[in-house]
Image 1 (cartoon, rainbow, N blue to C red):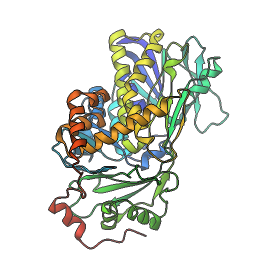
Image 2: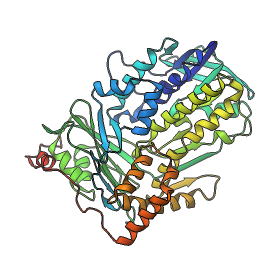
Image 3: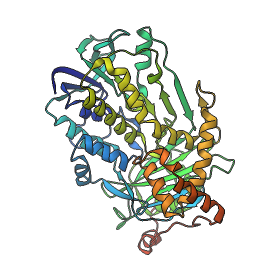
Image 4: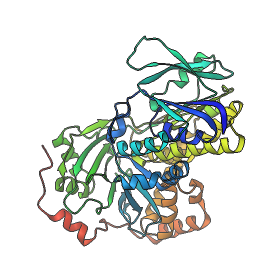
Length: 477
């Protein structure tokens, strides 16, 4: 540990908490600056996390990374009510090709509300002896210059126009999410604007929480029902995720021209319009607990800070402030965990050396390459997807990956070996390059040549079917 060094982390959500966990063993103290006031007791949604009301999953690759950063976090999550879902055993997945077999578990995901996840992680991080938090505080700008940062200027959130004070630091980490002001702060130092890439599928999400039918809590599988993008019409998707408290979180999404309504009747009607009735049957069998809530904050956006011609010493960035992903694939928190691990690995190898900030940002950026490639290669398949990039070939490369992904998904729906490889990559447990392994490619070719069709119906057990056969509750209020 470096006794006199001080690190400031901007943002106290998942990415910021994991950054603090990565820093804590190597610096004298860490201060987390959070604009919200944390809930006084127990898990609760915060205004600064608008997506908290929508479905979140932590894939096994991310869960293992979190566990390495915060030993015991997984056990605490499960004890608090999170559910461990086996992939593919405890999932019903309908891709563009059709329904997938429920193969034995090779990976897993943790499902719970975002509020519960943050509450558990926050408890783990703030229990570290050298980590503290400034709540209700916002960063007004960086202190320093283009050569090096020396801290952050902060003020009370409710003190618009109020006095600022300097929070001196050897290291500053921006983990403020999609609303990050870092790009503007850097141009204020006289540095050029960072290269930015966006891939925008235009998806809108509408989510509603339900009480699961009696006997279904903790038993019924996760359901992911995706549109067939090969049909030239707006996409309509459905996702049902079990969360703590015997509840289902149901997220419906649609691309431009098929946005799910935010009223109860429209929500139910949209569920009935999906390409299979399973999600609509689940909605009809459950008791609504919340009104539908919508968000359009789904575009993939990546700032290429690692390509900047120069970079201030002591400045780092991770999470959505660096690479924000479409939440449809559940990779945002896993990408943040991978970035935090890359930060920890840099500190373990080189110690706290502010002059290595550029190399560390490069390592963090490389850690989110696979999640970025996965999300963008999926989203280019949506009608009217919009791409903005200086790289003229970004779209064509993403489309080529999407065509390959179609073949993979079709093979993975029936072939156990391909499914294992796909699950490893989808869970961010294995590198994306593993899908180009000779054995995987041979199996994909064989599946394509066989003409075998994916399942026309989901593999529901008799007990699971029985849960949906009872009298439907009134889902519209």
